[in-house]
Image 1 (spheres, rainbow, N blue to C red):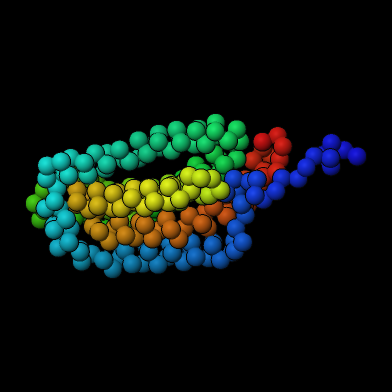
Image 2: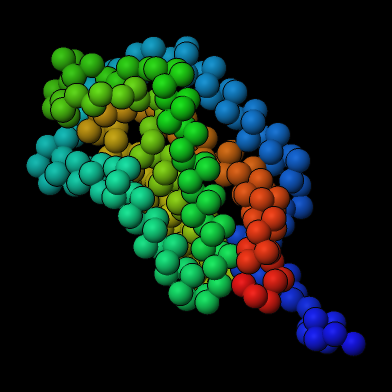
Length: 235
């Protein structure tokens, strides 16, 4: 009998939470595709419908709160966000002594986050008019819908919660993750670099798209690489 046959099988409960196969893969993908279509169509209809709310939120951009929201906007801008993701991915790999959860984590975030930039260019919704704002942020050159910052943070939280699903940190990650998403939502809207509907659409995007992305990347693509297969002792 071969060594492989004698080796105990890995139980599903022993597999990191983000690697557990989805029980409804086709439904997850269908929901993700439908969400992309609906969110894109909605973006074309919004115009400046919530400029009044943007102006009201922007009045809060003073003192310590204004400095805080601007700092949040800078910290999760694309370059720092990539750095944060790489560092957390490295920690997941180091703590688990397993490259697969780390690959699943970073891949899920990337494939959820990056396509939103394509939709942003397709919809091309302008950001709130700085001439109408009481405390305008410097003009941003790219369109605003959806908010890349908010898509990123929501995708990051979802992926991290999956990684920690079977650990004592799971519930804490959920609560802190919700707080982080709310903080980013209000940061980008108090700075008025995005309309509130930009940020809401971004949260909906990640919530709907990330599960489908996880199916495609983790359940379908990763097993094609021997060192990323669940149950491969070489990993």
